[in-house]
Length: 251
Image (cartoon, rainbow, N blue to C red; front, side, top):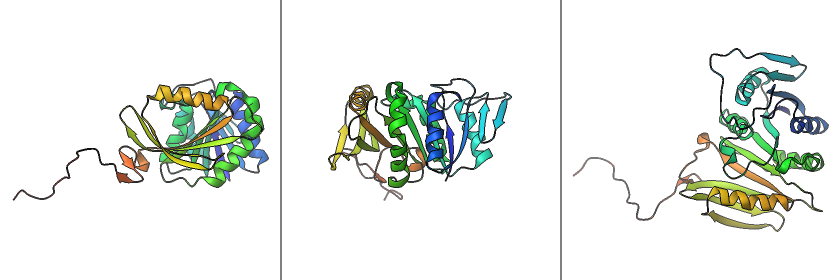
């Protein structure tokens, strides 16, 4: 598989080097593109009326630009089958994905119809990434059948346990003050519908505890292309006391 690797931490960051080595070891054809310097937290920023200097060495491009500039350039240059952003230095949980260049890269690729994932390392402990990244990527490629506009947000734990757990979370609808999630704890095979009515900051604190306990967090996120918003499994969510809409002319 042709996989384009990108990030927002810069071309010389440890995370993208680990990701490249892991994918190559798994037999994939890897292309890379990244900013020349750290552009963390730049979200979906793009350059306007600016010359973008770049250098190419084999299948690696470095660009004097934002992460999203890099990705757009890379999609044209390499035409990948999949995009993987990361491995980010620090988790992307709670509200952090809103401004994360790493998550934005995966979201943009998904909107372009390309399977994608964002991978982040909690507390920057890249020794964990070296140990489990191959199995995480294998799980990513073989288990998840993403719909158009969906992508994976994966957070690696700060510590290793004897047997890694995986926590899958599918965001199916957004409601005021929280999110509605469908979750599966693979370690116990217990499925549940989880209504997160607390603020995202509170949930971020909970996710931190999970990551510190050795849990690998998988989230299936959706862009506007996947029909996000007030939707539940593709159907409009009815709110309390909602009156049906009438069509046609008044009688």
